[in-house]
Image 1 (spheres, one colour):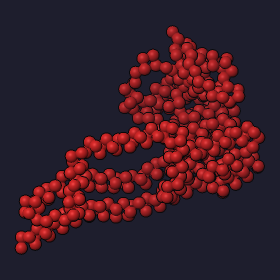
Image 2: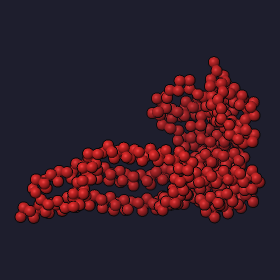
Image 3: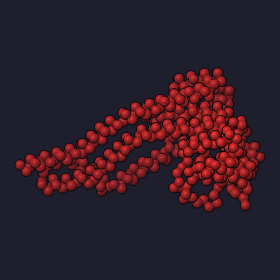
Image 4: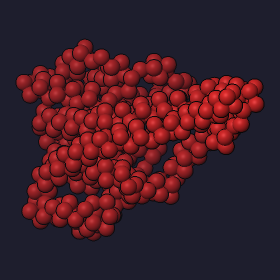
Length: 404
């Protein structure tokens, strides 16, 4: 029985080609694509029924930390001479993530059918990112798979640690904002109206600020569904806008120019770009293929545009430093160091040094940002809740005067 596959491939001229075909297995499908003189970028099986596996919905995604741990273990076993199939069997036994475990079983089956490790991994792009696949492929070709896996593990571990530090720093401010929103909504919808009933029963005068707060509470209580629909519409509209080329470009440009978060986003982009490109080049991946991989993980459309210009520059015999400089994202120090690296042939080492520098910068900026946000949020939240409470206390003084 033949299985349906969809694929992405590149021609000898570098043009991206997509298509569908039927074959006995993945190995045969890749052979058919190669016979068409195409280089396989991605291939996946098409489900006959198209049902969603409920296990995949409730299972945890495969994160960078799990992939980094797998790479460390894989590299250690490969280095001591354990056969690849046996390595994968051990990894499957030790794996706790159900999705990764099932995927590794399928990768093992593909290897038993005669496919290479890189081709086996390409069939599962949702589990293994482009950076992972490209570096593994270069390791297989060069015969230094263990070293490449070590480098890949280190790269993914650093990326994971950086993201976790940012999440950790932002957890407290996010919690403060969430508690503040719940507190304000509770006061407006349930607490303030009771005080107003008391004031009305005693025929006491109600100040303007109190009437304003009460009116806001009534709107939230009577028309909460409109507020929810409005918020949902804004979110859906934003999601739709960023699916367009122009929308993504505008969003990414605004993100880079934000007064507080802009430098942090810029530092993360530079660090990720330099770390990934340096790791790929050091592993022996060709420059154009490396840029194509980095383009998919850049995370910013402005940078993607500059990477496309780099590819065009390299095809014409130029370098990558000038397109980077034109992008406006990368500061002069970075572009100058990359230009020196291109001239000396040590661009991979310089890229790693730039990545190290900006990772430290991002960590320091996150620490400063966290220290800055805490007092600002406390003062802001305290001011809002204090204003609401004062709006309730002031009429109480009126009641006391009224009683006297």
